[in-house]
Structure formats: C-alpha cells, structure tokens
Image (cartoon, one colour):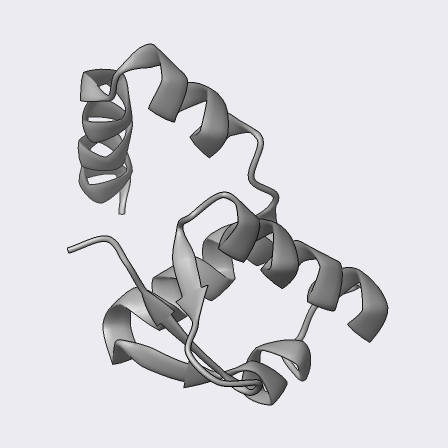
Length: 86
C-alpha cells in the first residue's frame, strides 16, 4: 500500500497549482465518491448517499453538489452521476 500511496502523491505533485488547490479542498467523502464514480463510470447518487460515512445524508448531498459545481463529475439525471475526467 505504501508504494501505491507514493504513486498517488507523485501524481498530485505533477498537477498544476490550480488543480492542486481543488484537490486539497476535497474531503474524504468526496474522494471516496470520485473513486467509485471513476471505477464504475456511472453511479446512482443514493448508493453514494448510503455509504458508510459519519456525515449526514444532507452533508453528503452538499458534498456531491460541490463535485458537480467544481466540474469533477456531471449529474446526468436526477439520480445518476458520471465522471468527466478521462
């Protein structure tokens, strides 16, 4: 796991400063949601809202809304999120 973590840190270091700022402002739930969206390409929002997190559903919804507003993912319909990053 340590090697994979170092790879992630190196990739973060390669980002332009504006992208680094966006990345560093993401909370753990948002990172978890993005990783699920990247793996599955399309994810239903209620599956993300029901994840094992200490945040309330309202807080999770606001976090997902922030991801959409930042342009990191797109809300295709009312219930499905998909990734914009390739």
